Amino acid sequence: MTSTQNTPAGSSSASVLDAETLAFAEQISDQVASFLLALRAIAQENDAGRAVSLLLLEISQVLLAGARLGAQRDFTPREEYQPDVGPEPDLDEMRMRLAGMLDNVDTYSFVFDPYVPEVVESQLSDDLASIATDLDTGLRHYRNGHVTEALWWWQFSYVSNWGNLAGAALNALLSVVSHDRLDVEVDLDSDQVVVAEQMLSDPS
Image 1 (cartoon, rainbow, N blue to C red):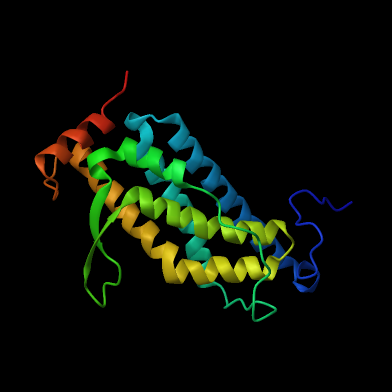
Image 2: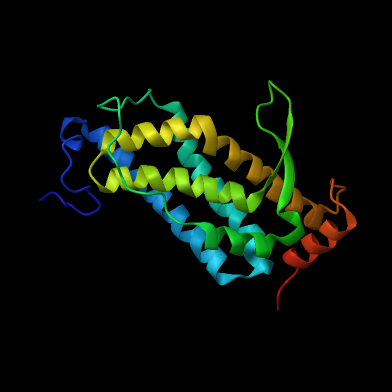
């Protein structure tokens, strides 16, 4: 007997996809859903002592999903215009909570395209909210039964936006961890160093 658990309901697009692609889409949707739940939980928990390490873990895991999407064939939506999945989620409260926890290490600099080296200043909280918005859009397509559109959107937004943002955020968080674990010099001012040390110290 075939289980219907985690199978998108009412999907005409699912019926024309092969079993391997359907299984792949389900795996990506599970990873995306797990990341979104974890990100909201980290923001809600408001535990600065654990936030950096947990964010490092969750971003690493969702980047694996992105790498798998990047290695796949190009997915193509069935129609020129994607089905409407409603308004974007309101992530402002989550973003503000993350900004409050990250405090002075929230702002960081990175190069969006290493082949067009232009240093960009950004906020981890803003970038995490942008990543979550991209991933949530694909997840809603998937849960509405638009499997092909979900795969296309996750893949397209990975190579155009959230993959770069997630990689930059991972590097920034790793820099904070490296400073604490290895006592290496990083490009932080004195206030940011103090915040980084406090966040990574044992809260007990």
